[in-house]
Structure formats: C-alpha cells, structure tokens
Image (cartoon, rainbow, N blue to C red):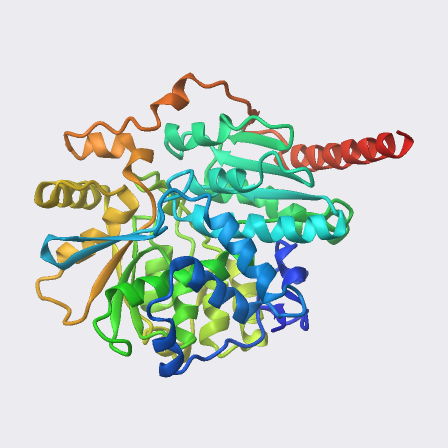
Length: 475
C-alpha cells in the first residue's frame, strides 16, 4: 500500500510518511493510491469480528507488513482500545420506531473521535519510540477533536501538542475537557474566533515546508489519514451488527460528511448514507447539488462540531469519486481556494449519489424537537449532533425498507445546555467535576498575529527539546 497527495505532487509514500504529516506539500490531503476491494466471501468472514478485530482488518489493508508486523499491529490496537470505557467499545441501542443508535462515544472524552485517536496515538508512539524521534502536533478543533487528541498523547515523552479551540463556539464542558489537561507537553490556546478562522494560521504553518521539517510538525485532525483509516472500521462494525444477512444494503445516517463511510462503500461494503448537517450546510449543498461554496460566516448552533464552513474531507471525496484523478482534484480545489466556490462536475455527482443518497439540514429547532422526541418515546437522551441524524429519521413518512442506523458521535453529557433547551428533565452532570479542576490556557485575541504566536510557540518547544537533549548528553 502506497500513498499520494490528492493533488498529484507526491506519490509512492509509506503509511509512516503520511501518518507523520499534515497537509501534503501541494496543499492537498494524503490518500491511498488504490483502495482495496473486498469480495462477498471476505465480508462474510468478517461478519462476527469484534470492533478491535475490524480495526485491525482495516489497518492491515492500509499498512504494509514491512512497516508493522501483524503481531505488533494487533497488540498496538488491542492495548490502546482497552483504554476505552466499555468491553464492546461500540454499542447499539434499538429504540422504538426502528431507530437504531450506534453509540460510538464510549471513550475517555465521550466522543467518537476517541476511538480513532486512541489508535493513532498508539501508532505515533510505536514509531517515535522505535526511532527516538520527537514531534509537535498542531490541532484546530471545533469542540471534540481537541480533547480526544489531548487524551491520546498528553504526558508522552516524545510529543508536544498545541491545540487551538474557538472560545464561546464550543460548549463550556468541551472547553474544560481541554483546559483541565495540565501536562508539560500540552499547550492550549483559546481563540477569539470560529473554527474556520483558527484554521488559517494552522494552514500557514503547514504550508511552510521548511518550518514543518525543522520542527517535526504534524496534525491529527481529520486531515491525517491515520484517523480516517481507523474510522472506516466504524462503518464495517455498524453494518455487520445491523444487517440481517451479509450482502443486503444497510442505510447509515451520518452527522456531517462521512468520508470514511464513502471509502468503506468503495471497498465493497453494501451501505448507503444520508449526510445530515446543521444550518452550516456546505456539506449538504456540496453532496446534494455540487455547490461547494462558502456562503457568509459560520452560524453558531446547538451542534458546534458542525459549525464549519470549509470541511477538510470534501477533497478526499472528490479524489474518491473522480476515480482518483489527481489532476482533476487539483484543478477543482485550486479554483475553490481562489474563488471560495467551485461547481462539482455532473459525472462526479452521479458517482457520489450512489453512495450518499440524500442530505438533510436540521435547524436548532429541529435538533431540540428530535432530542425531545427521542427522550419522550424511549427515555433515552441523544447529543445534538446525533439529533441532527435522528431528525432526518423522524422526517421520513415511510420505512426505508432496509435496516437503518444513526451514528451517535458524542454522549449528551458534553452538551448540558442543549439538553436543557430541549426541555428534557435529565441532569447532565457526569462531567460537573471539571468545574472545580484547575485550568491552563493562553488567549489568542482578535487583532493579534495568531500565525506569529503559533510559530513562536512551536519554536520554543523545539528549543526546549534541544536544550533538554544537550543536558542529557552532558549527564
């Protein structure tokens, strides 16, 4: 398995090369040069495999044996997934009205990103210890990625992590999940801006090739292929637990764009998907009618992880549904970057719509209504992002005729404000202890040079490591 840039400048790269990276050198994202195809017999052989086993199966298809042996890879995955909070890792709640909730949030920060980043953190540590290398991870978050990334690497000897969070745009609980992690290798910035705005200085850092190389700078946002690779297993596990017979189609309702799910379908998994979003609807417009364009500023909503205007993985979807035509992807993405808009060609849309069959946009009122209805009918509480997908389910007047699952991306405990606004009589206080814990963070105020602040911090981290290394050698 080799990797390339979605825009064509680089090719023939190893998994390790793309794991320890951010954006590609041409501004694209790293992707496999080819996607493995699974036969029906291969799918049937996986049908009763555990979640960790499916993560191993997916990782084995995208990481060559020469890079990590099967014994090492299996041990790495098992040891890191053991840290999650339930034996099954992923649980499925079968509710009234054929509403199946796939709980992907049983991790230390109660978000689906814990599952992938626990493994990504293990992969990073495997290589770092093997080569005695140091890295700095640079992460922008809309709420959940930051805390999941922090939990995967805080306290690690060979890693520093710098996280930018949008103050006031994620919930107080989400912010406290980050600022209460106090370790020498953790550096948190509270930014006076939204998720798209804080991404700009991050992109500038990654577009400076010499700076990236000099400071061993990487990202574990969804731009990192390792995270997408692990998330492919979510779709295989969901499919096998929902299908009546391997080979029949299952429909999955996905909060946001479902890049990993599209890859799973490309590999032969018999799924279709509905991409469900909040009022920040760029993903819905792109996937429904090819309108990939930024329209105004992002709107603050009850589902803050979706409060973005420029979703990273649209580029991977373009790569996938242009049949890996890197030249074509480059032209489309460069036009988008120049104009803040591009029209996705009809033939690409035709291919895409065989996988993402529909899109759905939910307002805050829709979210509250869906949260309230799920609770009233089942005495079960969903988070506002899961409610976006549940709202689509409730909006359908007829049964789809195939098994359907809603991917639940976070626990409601992280969103007590949304639960209260939905008039659900349940106190979300399992994370209340965060209110009394000490915090550590630094402001990035509007009008300040955010790019300059980031560069200075990263340079300080590298200088500190060099000084420590000299002291060790003297000792």
